[in-house]
Amino acid sequence: MSEFLRLSISISAVLWAAVLMLPWQPWRIRETLEPENSSNDRDLTDVTVVIPARDEAPVIGATLRALAAQGRNLSVILVDDHSGDETAQEALKAMPEGLLVIPGKGLPEGWSGKLWAQQQGLRHVATPMTVLLDADIELAPGMIGCVLDRAREDDLHLVSLLAAPHLSHFWEKLLMPAFVYFFKMLYPFALANSKNSTVAAGAGGCMMVSTRVLKAIGGVESIKGAIIDDCALAGKVKSSGYRIWIGLSRSVSSQRPYRDLAEIWNMVARTAFTQLRYSLGLLIACTGFMLLLFWLPVLAPLFGAGSSAWVLALTGFALMLISYLPTLRFYGRSPLWTLTMPLAAALYLMMTWHSAIRYWQGERSRWKGRIYRV
Image 1 (tube, rainbow, N blue to C red):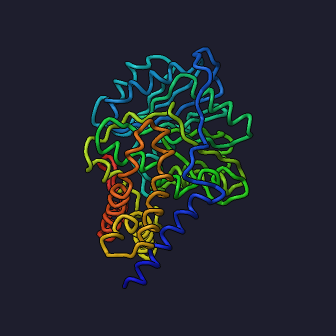
Image 2 (cartoon, rainbow, N blue to C red; image 1 turned 120 degrees about the vertical axis):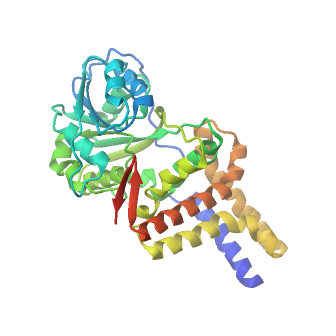
Image 3 (cartoon, rainbow, N blue to C red; image 1 turned 90 degrees about the vertical axis):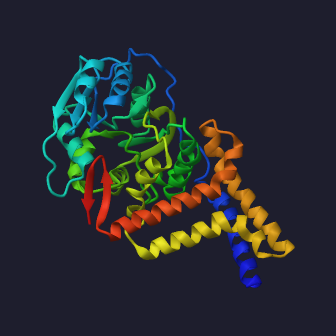
């Protein structure tokens, strides 16, 4: 047992060293985009923003006021996806001019709710560029112009930005930076942005796409049943020979609070098993890797490992903290939060297993009162 334990600890330390030395360095924060000019005099005639909205009355006003501050002649289309609250009324109060509100039609068979709402809005787009924006995303002044410039300068056909999470409550502080960290580990941005790699990733909260390219790939109808629709769309664009880019931004922020663990748990469980392609083998492999990487360095001393194993365990633990530190620094969090990574990893692993259990019980996903069956 002791030999197996020492071997496992050694493998854990070596894997952490390999993570830090990977050429694409997924743990680093290099792919970022922030506006340099916050002027609201930018001409945005070439851009239409499409927002699917379902029960978003508390946040839609701030979202639209932020859009109104982006520049002149920006077209905004909001699809009210059968809201049970005052989403449409709050939207019209916040943006009385330049906003088209479309009442959503019934959800057809085979479509996810968000993609169907986007599809209805996209039918009215007549500009060269389209921004697919979630209803809870607030953009800093100048952000749309900044994304437009990046797309034109680098000849990009899809640019997406992972929104800065809401970080007011304890569970948000514990789990949301870790969510970004794990997302970057799963979809390394350097590989996603490289035309020489097949890795593709998208952030559906804020995504600018060439309208021509979107039509060329068959629109969102080509991925109409996707649960992880942002990565599915990015994959479709990239596999069709077009250029994509994904990054982080503090100027794209989520207004959606997660006040307790249950809210984050349900958000993750909605798609976690989908990430693993509903594979039990991948789930077991993921569990083994998570335990090996995030918990063995912590628990090794409890098993009476020798001094050499202790050193290796401490090395692995230190490398784990180093890999998480850039994400925390980007969001202005204390380095002490690195110590919570084993706990965050354990919670995410349990959420993934819960996602799998839901799937085996016949539920593929649930969101905003809709349940998608297997």
